[in-house]
Image 1 (cartoon, rainbow, N blue to C red):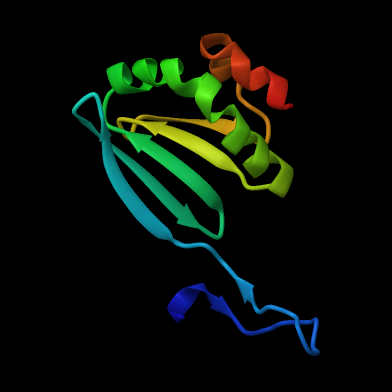
Image 2 (cartoon, rainbow, N blue to C red; image 1 turned 180 degrees about the horizontal axis):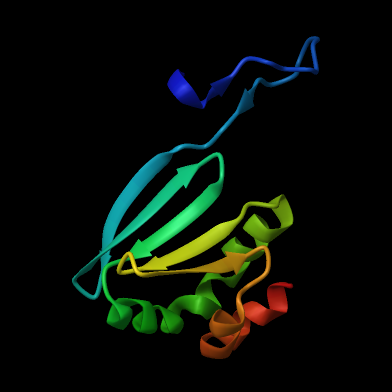
Length: 109
């Protein structure tokens, strides 16, 4: 399992699953521009290359609310990094800038 394996399971006994940390990187594109989702023990980081791509993501907030709600319920922190210059919190509490640009995320709090 590599670095993501945590063998210090305090719940010993039959039927208990080992504790795992989700770790990895998913690369894709949005409107022809690169988007990277990275996961580690600190949560998820959504990285976009330009401010234009981040602005275009506002269109998808409504369709992502169920998935973001599940991440919020699970306590997974999510951050958005734009062009390596600005990083803002999306979950567990969206930053003021995010709530202004995408008011739909304010309902997750």
